[in-house]
Every structure is written in C-alpha cells, then in structure tokens.
Amino acid sequence: MILYIKALHIIFVITWFAGLFYLPRLYVYIREAQENKQPLEVQNQLILMAQRLLYIITWPSAVLTFAFGNWILLLTGYHRIMLSAHGSWMGVKYALVLILYAYHITLDMYLRKLKNNTLRMTSYGLRLYNEIPTVLLIAIVMLVVVKSNVSALYGVIGLLLIIGILILSSILYKKARNR
Image (cartoon, rainbow, N blue to C red; front, side, top):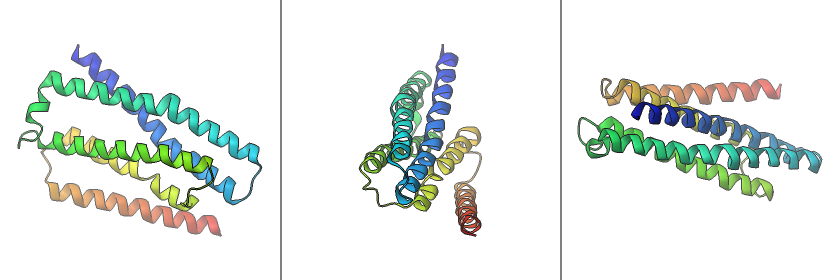
C-alpha cells in the first residue's frame, strides 16, 4: 500500500510543480500586458488562464501532495525521528516544503493584485521570483536522494552556486532582450 501512496505523492508533486513553474510565467505575461497597455481582452484571458491553473490544478495538487506526504511520514514512522540526528534531513526537507507552500500562497496573493492591477513587482522581478521553486526543488530532491551523506557545507555552497547561476542567467537574458 505504501508504494501506491508514494506514487500518488510523486504524481501530485509533479503536477504541483508544473503549476508553480508556469504560474509566475503567466504573471510575467499579465504584468507585461499591463505595462504595455495591451487590450483588456488579452489581460483578462491571461488572468483567466492563471486562475484556472491556480485553482483547478495547482492548489488541489498542493493539498494532495501534503496529504499523501504526511501519510507516508506516519506510515514509515519518520514523523517520530524527523528531528533526530538520523532523520534530520527529513526535518530540513519538511522545512523547505513549508517554504514552498508559503511561496505558493504568495502566488495566490499576487494573482489577486494582478487582477486589480495593484502588484508593484515588475515583469523582471516576477522572472526572478519564478526561480524560487527551481532552487527549492533542487534542494528537496537532493535531500531526499542523498539524505545525510553530504555535508551541510557542500549543500549550502551548491545551493548558493545554483542561485548565482540562475540570477546571472536572468541578468544576461535581460540584457540580450533589451538589445
């Protein structure tokens, strides 16, 4: 039974991340449509697409990811050893997942602000914001696969390098786009 629960957990993680990766991209398009004074029909269509993605796919996937993930924790007993030295990787993973849920909530708030055209973040800021789930995904997958076989120092250095590469590539893309 646990293998079915793990499979469902992985499926909903994938669909959740699909939404987390695409939603900010839609927000960039909405913001650019607002900044460039594109017709209201274009803006409204993009907002409708974002609403459907957020409320029909992304939120249900997030809820089911949480449910199946915690069910696995209870079945395997990891909820008891999560904060011990042996299970510390799971505690760190859980904390990163909670940060991911906080990010998801901000996406919901940003959509409401985009609908009212009150979001202060630029399209470039949204592009950078779009990189947060990438960094969290890398960190979470590395924790799950490697567990405690890598030092925390190397993990932090690796994450900082990834963040640096993502920011540098974003800056280079912006420069190339402005030419």
